[in-house]
Image 1 (spheres, rainbow, N blue to C red):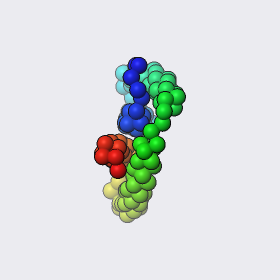
Image 2: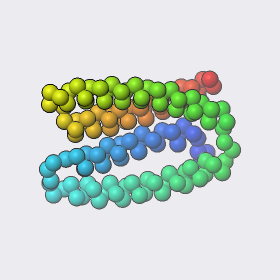
Image 3: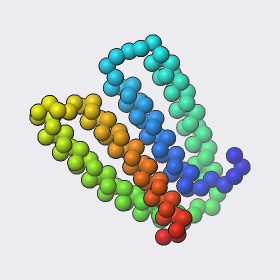
Image 4: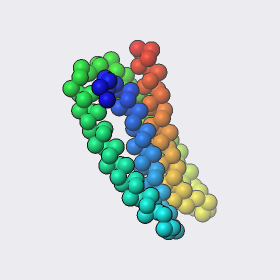
Length: 138
């Protein structure tokens, strides 16, 4: 825990946030109930609280160390690219949901999963794109 905190690490942990979001969406959208679901919910709650506390300390340590301005600039460019990609994906999702919803080919739960998976994929793309840009010093 004494090693330097990098912006790559901070960006990479956003993938874990999306995994947590996906598990919570699964909990909200399911229509059945099994006894072990409560164990999963409780365990995830403890993991989330622990992860957020750990992240709080890592981000605080990152900010107290010298900030890499080039990495910050690359992150802003990655965010700009990913925003455009995500906007396109959500337009296609909304359009497909509108069209397929009229013929009852897709449910709202399925639309939710498409959105959650899009968010997850965008966080992975953002991390990979940032790592490539940061390693090349673009």
